[in-house]
Amino acid sequence: MPATESAYSTTPLKPGNPETRLLELLPGPETSPISGKLSRRNLDDGKHASPPYDALSYMWGTTNGAKTIQLNQDDNFKVTSNLAAALHALRLRDQPRLIWIDAICINQNNVQERSDQVQLMRKIYQNAATVYVWLDIEIDLNNPALRKLLTFDDHSIDDDLGTDASFWEPLKPIFKNPYWMRVWIQQEVSNAANLVIQCRDVILPSFNVYHFLRLASSRFSAVDINTPIWIDWVDIYPNISLPTRFGFLDSQHRPLQGSTLSNCDLNLLEILATSYKLECTDDRDRLYGLLHLASDYSEGGLTISYDYSVKDTYTSVADFVLRKYNSLNFLLYAGLNWRCPHQERTLPSWVPDWRDPSTRIWISYSPKFENKLPSFMSRFKASFSADCSILNAYGIRVDRIDQIFNLPEGVELYNTPTSVFLDSCRSMVRKARSNQVRTGPESDIADDFDLPQWPALASTLAAVDNFKPEDADAHSKLKQAITMSADALVKVSRIAETKPSERRSTMLDIIRMDKESGAIFDNGTMFTRLAWGVIGKHLPFVGANGGMGLTLKSAAEGDEIWMIFGCDKPMILRPADDYYLVIGEGYYGGANRGELMKDMPESVEVGDMIGGYRVEPLRLR
View 1 (cartoon, helix red, strand yellow):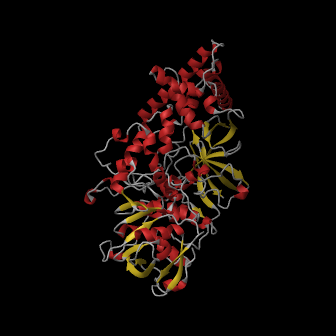
View 2 (cartoon, rainbow, N blue to C red):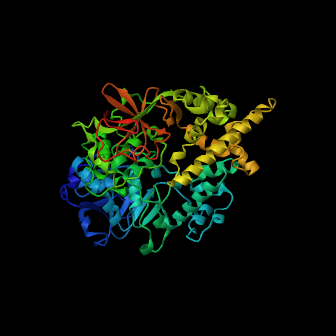
């Protein structure tokens, strides 16, 4: 909400200084007008500086029905109705309260000041004695659910939740509140030394809340999705979390890592990817509001400026990763959204668009960043064009998508008969076989599921290369297990074909069989479950060279599979004139675990042939 300059005339902030303003909220009766004075605080003085101050975390809310408070010489300073309610609730009756509130302590009309203060957010909330979460909702302190919540501690167990999910229904206004889905509150809560949730006159200590959330999360995860009780728990499940340290009363032994997004420290790309469902008014805040939660970010590592466009802001993330790690792994989060034509995009295809979750349905786990890179990489450093529209990189072209396979229009995966699914698999095996150079006795094999392409396809559909085992032997055993399960599915389907009078088994039927039989390999459940999870979001394809892989729905036949130097996984690129468009991360058999880069000689040059592939420069736009 626009501020008036007179309120800040006596407390100017010098750009670049680690100082902020604090509001001295003057005492008064509950219903009397709000008044306060601003002062300056140097944040380098630390959290033990005197006098201590608190900080407020809240939703701004709509500007409709704005209220007026007195601030310094300004008798007409406007605040939202939600903030006005918080001020009345937090004001002490007999003494001033020193508190930091963004809408008041930052001159929102001053772009430079807003940019400077964002850089200081971590210190502001870390130095606060207590951070108050304000929820303008009415909660009955005598409600049994609330009284029970206030008893939860580190000794509480699952049985303390009871068996009736509806018992916790009165707490939904707290834990389903839109406040928790805002971008900015993540760092405000995560950086707090002490946290209190205040619902008008009711105060909830974070210690009790944390242990309720701990048990509720475990209960939700343990409930069988196939039972009616799951629906009851999903309705009341609090889709929020608090950092682990709030589960400890002794502040000296609290773990420091973690945030509202994860119990572990996350790097910048992981933070941005994890938070895609969170909301913010300004798209730039999707970065600025989360920056200080990233384990690999330190002050000054990125320029924060509200003079930057969204394109400049999101491109700076790619620049940060390239500078810090000499890595192009940000490409794993980039690509064309199949619902948004390239002509309508405002960002280059190689810049991740953190606003749209549909571009972030990737296959692999979060990429690792290591300072020790292969020696040959020093010869192939990526760079940006002067206007940051082009990314110049190097890599090898592995294959070209020849045919993409999909279910018939209108067919839902879970209702797909296994025979229909296996018919599609048979078609892919035949296509791969026809595209490969045939050698030896393969041409004499009559059964498609006896061809060597079938185990390769099974591994692809299960995305086996993205599983954790780094040990080659363990990885090989996992592939064998998936092949055995896939063969079992073929056997089960063929037995069913001999009984035409019976209903054909669907993919979902196979997945549920292990609950009835207690087996896992004898009916194809393992393979089916894994394939269902993968091809529900990705499309299998066969390459021109006969290789098989997976791609996002935005891919098309003719797109190419590349291993780009500095990027851990195969990428799907679309040729366009003298440049490429990034479609997204791909999966390609024999290229997902760095196999093609392991034996790259240090002396390799552009144009050299390595393992049958030519090293080439490429321009991404």
